Length: 297
Image (tube, rainbow, N blue to C red; front, side):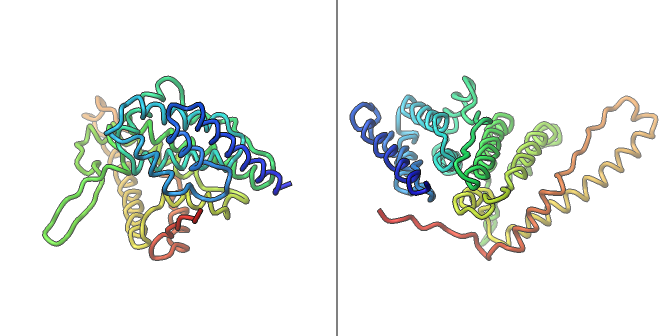
């Protein structure tokens, strides 16, 4: 049965490529999308992803970029195969991280007309693995949608747009949130917390935990060396302690007569599962995260 599914998937891919060659005005782009998101259980091949990046660059007309997003959305909406769905999300995620900002801008415009990641009913029940991976696909889509909403609030992308502060002989990369004033920080933190909530929810379960394609997608979340991950964990722990002390300080201020006219913000801590996930990652991660070699063919 599994062999039949693979053969059927390959036939569907070749048929779709053939139709694109005959009917599509964006032949090369359509073929690259189908090949990058085919039914083969391996990460999207780099040469196809690069063609998609090229088709959505600032040098191309905005209509071309919009068509690419429409084609990816259509691919995601029509498929009932978890491999195709996950690879489509990976391509979108990589385009947001590594592609030209025009892709993100057009994706924001497209999402105003309807959620591109609205696949809450997606299900591939062809096998126990497909069932577990389908659940993770839905979670992955929620994270990417939240990532887009976070950009609407922050007006910058926390992954692809970092500020570099140069010091003689040292280059430090840090988040823009370090430069915000109190008012801006309070406006942006809820969006960041919600994105963190979606990130924590991306912990796979069941057979999906050991699937290589899921692990490849997760590498886009934790793309950092073990040493950097340790530093990040210590920062989160310290932030949690500071939040507790700040809550105590607010509690004291509320007892003062003058404070009766003020409204203090509600402080929410990252869920314990996030710290547990980070600690588990640090225990098991190599000194640097794995890199995927492109398959031949």
